[in-house]
Image (cartoon, rainbow over all chains, first blue to last red; front, side, top):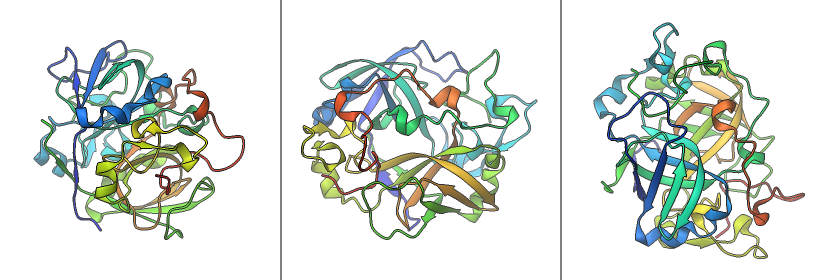
Length: 162
Length: 162
């Protein structure tokens, strides 16, 4: 039951970023180049304004993620250590990234998106339509340390913070 | 770059459901039993009212997901076929499920949650805190066929629909 599974990338991220950075992803445009064999599986996705991109943060070493249980959120040492599952840190047992992005265009097997917090070459595992009535929970609450920062980096995925 | 990756389940879902069903997940309580080695990585998660559960829909056969590019959303044949990436169908290249759930309690390595659309024995790959300022996009739009159904099954993950 707890044996590993094989996930096969269905595409790759292309953008101008060659190294992770902290925040400032919101305006970044990326393309997602889906494998030809899955191009038709995108049919209809262009009807949605926003989609989830599920990706694999491939730069996180297996040793680091196998041994890290706690991090300082946002790399901010003023915030007490939290378990990695209580953060959006890229350092986690399975380095799966999740981000809602604006879908700007689909052309064949290529999506153009805005706001993806992943660097060039990141493998993409899955794409899902974003349904606010299903994925939006306005009444959700977070602890004080996780309130939206008034300034500074957003709470992004692919950063160096552990 | 498009080589497979090994994902290792970090826990397992426990609830009363032994087979997938269509909808009616909202009130379902489940527990997520996290492996002992990752119990401390949950520290701080209890401060969030809602979390994302990312899981592996292990009942979907590899043959089916390798050959299915289109499905009728919600298994409703009145809705035209859509590419699997434009739906939340469990039949997709990587059968990764994603659901926001209410976190009711954390006790050691066990989480009690409400609303998870996964059956007993489902492997869990990752847990993330839900941040509405980051994950909630109220202005998102969907095509007509994906509007919230006035009645009938919710748009859930682990169903039989292809």
